[in-house]
Image 1 (cartoon, rainbow, N blue to C red):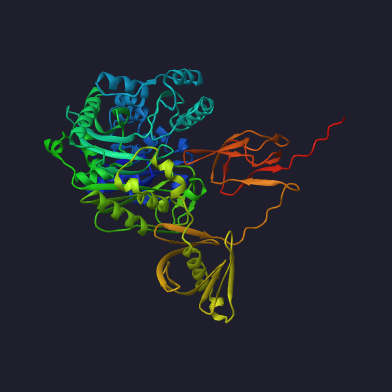
Image 2 (image 1 turned 60 degrees about the vertical axis):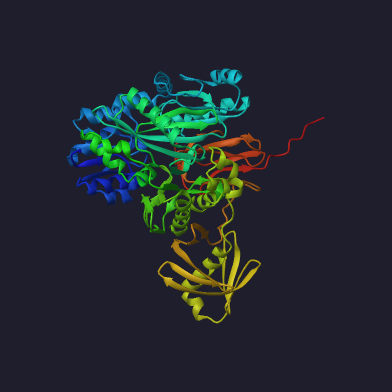
Length: 636
């Protein structure tokens, strides 16, 4: 076992989760935080906390010298990198070791080897692990075109370094190659500091199945079964489960043996994940993640172990016990990620203050969260807020428990993916276990719907009850909400748009409204954040705002484009006076590791450009103003 104090070089829910295990094992913990995370949940979860610097990760969580200084100042003896940031950085692993500290992770040389997708694929082939055909090395548009000419489309262009879906683009036609390479290279460079790319065949309707491995420093290596991670959007996992519905005992043995063979070939140590794509032709090596995975709790749930504890024990030199080889899955576990993003607005990252938070409890339910009521969600970091995990004796029970847990999760103040995920879990193919990596994208239009109609009515009743002056009057109470028009309450009836219903309401407890609409009574979570009233139930939520103020236009007929998400301006393609056509890219925003192009809504002339590259912008901040194009009259 490593000695404490233990410095956790990360943030969010994983830092909280590592601190929980460390506390159980009697280890003192040290958190690190940026200026944006001064009051973050992971700071409260640890015994000591050290400020690193400004909010941008490069000035705080990615600054190796500042992390080592934090360890020195607090007397830390070991460093756990969490996941993300520097968790797969061989330079950080070496720096920690050179500072005389224990690195809770694999050896630097293994991180370096497996972090290079070209080298790791070559090693996999040498170890007898099936691999996907691809062109390795640093490829550009010309190499991608040549590969497509030989192998056809679709292909995937992806970062040689890093993982997690960053720096990855699928190409389905020749005219997409240049844009895909540019975007993937830019994203890879921003995420990993390495813009090199490879290209390989993209397998349609394949599954994403990964195998958890543990290796000690004495030559022992075991696999702990597999996880199904096929439900993805933009190559980001949304729901994961263990075991996979598609893997039988014989296939589990073959995939496990392949994962162990690769780990041994890489001289691996610690916890790691070997990822495969599984199709009709068998399984193929995808990549190895040399860190703890976000979805590790489902493995913990079915095997009854603590993977963070084993990371700490392995780093301290403990051997793996023989009993780990004999573990078998008990039941089924499913995890749903909770993202700060708005499915009804193109899944754009969302930000703001969490006005209300309440995690569900119950048999087989676990919630790993990095936020609480009052937490600020910024665009500087990953949008993952929490994970909800359900365990049951079988898959059907785990699905039911997860759905009810998501329905009981209260998150008000920022849009989240919860209602969308509940709709995904109700899909017939998902319930049947008929999964593939493109399933979610095919279902998007059917999974994203409007909020329940009763949320507006419940929100109106909450506003009415909160207005003490209105309760004292005998006349009707009226209020207007942006996008919803006027609502009114009078003589036991509520009118909202074309709907009128008998209504009664009372506060069940602070923040909880009990409303009866046409004889149907439900409880609603309610929270105010400034002049915005949030109301939610069953994992869905609605923000009720007063009518928007009218902003002055820069010219007659001008249209001011606003930021659809908080973020950082990466590129500005236009200047004042430029003529643009509908669809032209005006600028590119980045938030929570996602890029978004802002395009011209119509032909026109640029009248005003607000931000410059590198500027931070807030939600709804004016970006570019487009005026109507003047008519040009040609002389005969």
